[in-house]
Length: 98
Image (cartoon, rainbow, N blue to C red; front, side, top):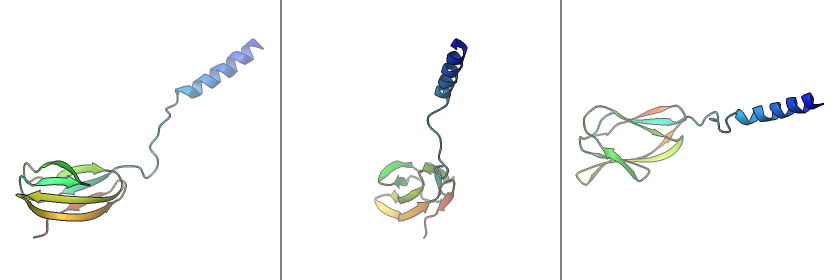
């Protein structure tokens, strides 16, 4: 009987070792890749400043899947203001249209 109780207790405790959090299917981050834009332009995602462009190379920001308002502002001029829908695991190229 003691062996049976010990085995049941051990099995119950083994379940506590499993992680309690997991990544749900479709909860993978999406990516916004700013392909072009003015050096020094401020990138703003959902009203939050994410930093100024330091060079001409693409910049990639990770975002949660869903709709996001994207802005790029340089010298007080709005170069881009648009809403994008980003899918889980997808990468959207953001370009400044001249």
